[in-house]
Length: 114
Image 1 (tube, rainbow, N blue to C red):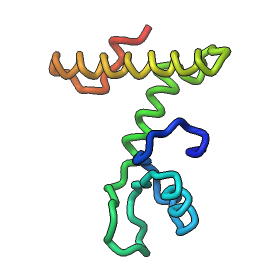
Image 2 (cartoon, one colour; image 1 turned 90 degrees about the vertical axis):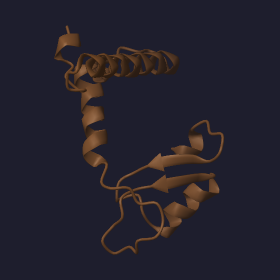
Image 3 (cartoon, one colour; image 1 turned 120 degrees about the horizontal axis):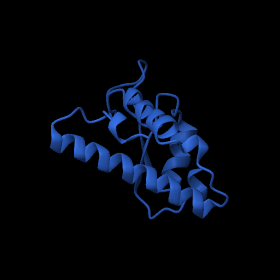
């Protein structure tokens, strides 16, 4: 999938523990990218290994799919899909920013949903 994406070089990919192995790391490196993922128990402590990020990105995906209705996007072309995904992310960023300014919990989005 990475090979089909438009890249400039030097991209950093976030993944979970399953994205491991010499062959996978070599293929990502050949595409001039870096994979960053939590360290597995059987790995030494060298290299970039963030703490478990799964709960955070799962929460964002759930928000996009459910509250921001990305599963029912209605796009008919790839350009239309990109536009609708961008709209949802801008909406989410605006809601979080407004909540921050109002002193509310960041992800309290119920006031912004129809």
